Amino acid sequence: MALAVLPTVPDLSVRSASTRLAVEFPELSPRSIVLVVRTCREDLRGSPADALPELVERLARQRLRVSLP
Image (cartoon, rainbow, N blue to C red; front, side):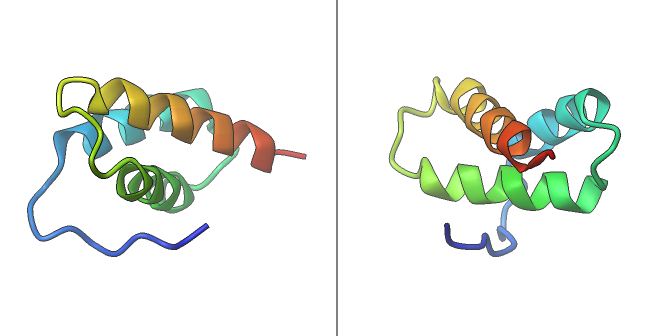
């Protein structure tokens, strides 16, 4: 899995997913969550723009669940 780089333009799909997932995974640091969400956003580059917010959040949620002990 490649690490995400900081975007030059704020991405609302990243911001909204990060906020919701921080509530869902309080045991993880917000910084870790944002990194996973940004990486998922990068991995989904080229997906339809309308589906992107949902796809980013679903993929990030799955990766965060797998990362928990």
